[in-house]
Amino acid sequence: MKMKMTRLILFSLVMVLVLGLASAGSGFEYSEDDLKSEEAKWALYERWRAHHNRPETDSDDEKQKRFVIFMDTVKRVDDHNKAKKPYLMELNRMSDLTFEEIGRMYTGTKLDQNHRQLSSRNSSRLKVVDRHNLPKEFDWRQHGVVNPPKDQGQCGSCWTFGAMGTLESGHALRTGQLISVSEQQIVDCDLEQGGCNGGVPAYALNYVAKHGGMTTTECYPYVAQRTVCCGAKLVNRVIQCTGFEDVPADDEDALLEAVAQQPVSACLFLYEGFFGYKEGIYTGEDCVGTDNPHAINIVGWGETPEGCKYWIIKNSWGQEWGEKGYMRLARDTGDPRGACQITMQTCFPTFDEAK
Image 1 (cartoon, rainbow, N blue to C red):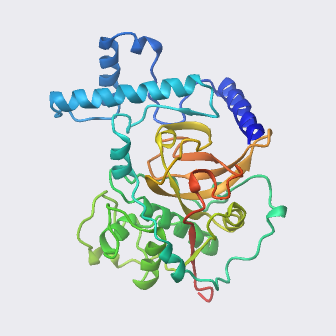
Image 2 (tube, rainbow, N blue to C red):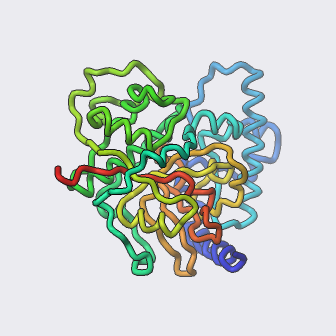
Image 3 (cartoon, rainbow, N blue to C red):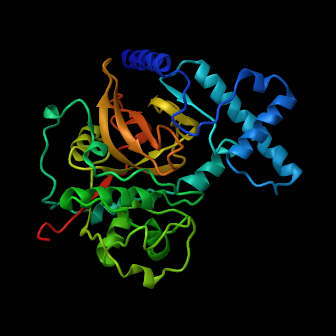
């Protein structure tokens, strides 16, 4: 473990020298001069508010509260980046929110091991893969089967994006057509789940199987809140599946074999390093406990020249977050659960191969 961490740190230092402090994410920068006085700190906060289009209607008390939270975040980011860790953090649109608020507004996955009882174990589409013969790196984005990262907004609907991301990719692999489907359809019409109050990605795929398939984002646009299910928007069903198959929990090797077949939906626990991630290989050392389960897609894997292995994670917080909406998460860390317990709840869709 120590050797792997040392390699990660050395690699990150090289990347910082090569890339400098160029932001891969929100593009908001600050300097030591912004922290020299209370007046400078308030000016920094006002500049940050303007950058993220924060409303001017906040009361003085609310603004003071947010300023205190913001400056706590600035200190964490500043201390972290000076510590020369394997990844950098930055200030983003969540920087004046508490951890609890971020978890409520920007995550939303629910953990439910009962879904494994509904998993198909007879999927003929996925073949047995020998992980020992897999390349050191593979990126589904380079094969035209991954849509760009979307933005769930302040709605606990990550579970819909995790499910629809793997559905879109699975369909593209079968047909050669990469279509953006409507997460809003799931938020509004899957009444067995909680919309912006959370749900289970596997159950979203079950909804698709039971209710006639998915329409497109264009036909049923995303609005980041639950509204009444609109049948008139569901006429054009473009993607269908027969259900889902789960990947064995606590088994990164099995997860690698699954990702070698197609991008998958996965869940992980989040904390401050993930919230403020900018670039580099996130080690997940601060993922403690079981707070803030969050659904993402795994769209590939890689390995640095120094031997540092990682997953390529697609998030649903827009393309200003992280590495243009993506993250590199440490892989093969020695914990069978994976960094941030990424193996705990993982699935992909199954299809009718006769069609």
